[in-house]
Image (cartoon, rainbow, N blue to C red; front, side, top):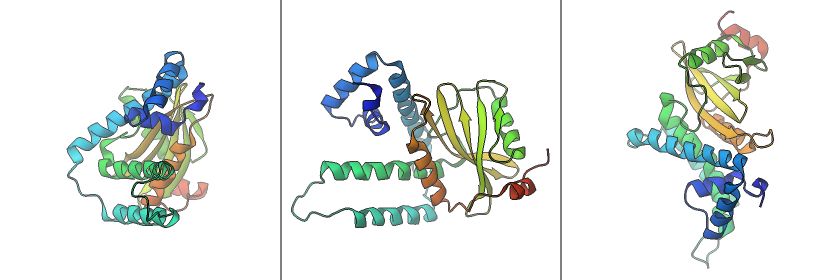
Length: 243
């Protein structure tokens, strides 16, 4: 089997120990001779560990009411769209998969809100130098959306995707960090003059493409914080720090 036979959902299920024996064996055999597939799996394994570590000290923190209301609305919509079976007492496999696809972005939104400024709860960024954060913040302070900026590491390009305001009126920016073997989509909001990471998702590149599921998760998160329409270049220049 080629790496194209294993989508992100399959790799996530394997990382969570929920893949059946037949698929697990097939994936393990493919991993032995496929470095790109191993790198894709590593992203999910790292993310799973990071999520667990981030949630441990926050497990008793209350979830914001606005997010709870948003999740309830999404759950009600899924229930309305899912056929009910009054005879069979267990959930069919296809329904399980449908629910799982829906839960992925919702879970990401929950983790992002609960962890707050803890940082990159769902992703990782290879540059480990302490200056990288300040460098990224400087770009977010001055560059309008649509621009690519090569960072000092020279292997990392920051692409500013869009600017918007959240439900509290805070300025937020979505940006992408492009690296040779991975891409990280991030949402950061400016609080008290500093940029706080709200959500970050890292995906291993496969044949030059970034999985669409990352953008879907970002979109779900933006919906949960009631993000406004993207600011125009003129509006961005008014709110960004002068160069």
